[in-house]
Amino acid sequence: AQTVTQSQPEMSVQEAETVTLSCTYDTSESDYYLFWYKQPPSRQMILVIRQEAYKQQNATENRFSVNFQKAAKSFSLKISDSQLGDAAMYFCAYRSLIQGAQKLVFGQGTRLTINP
Amino acid sequence: DVKVTQSSRYLVKRTGEKVFLECVQDMDHENMFWYRQDPGLGLRLIYFSYDVKMKEKGDIPEGYSVSREKKERFSLILESASTNQTSMYLCASSLRVMTNYGYTFGSGTRLTVV
Image 1 (cartoon, each protein chain N blue to C red):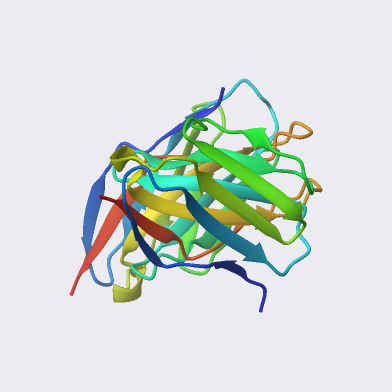
Image 2 (cartoon, each protein chain N blue to C red):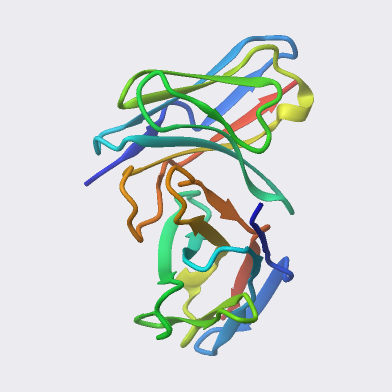
């Protein structure tokens, strides 16, 4: 079974600076999807960024980018120019491509605090 | 705007009560999921459903059951609520076909069992 590990329960960063959240996963599959979700105090889970394992190029969405290291099974999230609105719980998630196995497996989460 | 709606934001129930958590989606999604979220444990899958009247156990199904009589509605049932079921419950939905999209989530129900 796949597992996802986020080893940083909490992180903090000064506003306007850059922060990197770590995520590692374990799988025997060669094709899969990886996601980062954000959960602000409103509780609404928001998809931040996604990465297909067969793509070597790292995904980027505005100030958010990933460092996808397939061999190392690592999928970190970099937030540039941090803003107060980035404060939230961040979850890394894995999705298998095996037919029928459509569930997302989540990590433990990292609480990100932005210091003004 | 597409939505997944959970009927209650906060719920307080007594030990031994039968509890129903309701989830409705308006996106015609085939897949629906129930997760519970606990600090330090992340989100853990309780049950999921690929179609009407179909259900599959997730990682922590004990003490729970589900019902999916209509495509848009997926109910989580706590047959006899216990204090260790105090948690945040998140419902989600997705398309059946393999895509690179994740889920659409509801806003969660924070359940307290006293």
